[in-house]
Length: 147
Image (spheres, rainbow, N blue to C red):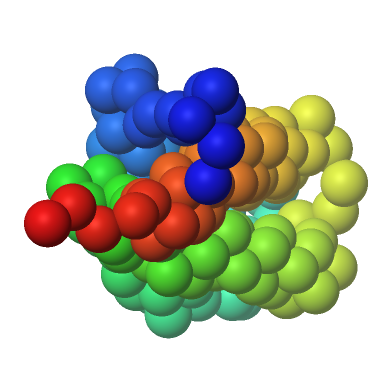
């Protein structure tokens, strides 16, 4: 390793963003889990037609993914695989929402809001944080051992 190379760091704001992402994902998924019918009526924007779909399983999976993202903030360099699971989980939740809920709810400003701001937008910071965690882990692994 070159002594003049810049040491990559993992700043505290990235940990805070992981905590925020985990809590946000958990909270929105809890809405699906516990208030599925009402949330579906709100997302459908048509209170006369109530879609006959359950968000209970969707919410449960989302809560688990949110919890794993939250946990990754405590040791993001060692537990970078949890960040990977979080990214994959966000992609799975987005695909699940599009394939399962959109045919019933239809595309409208609320369903697009949920898809973009609750699932897809979080992929950007999670990817940046994952790349940084991998760089720091690689740097620490390549350090020469001291006697």
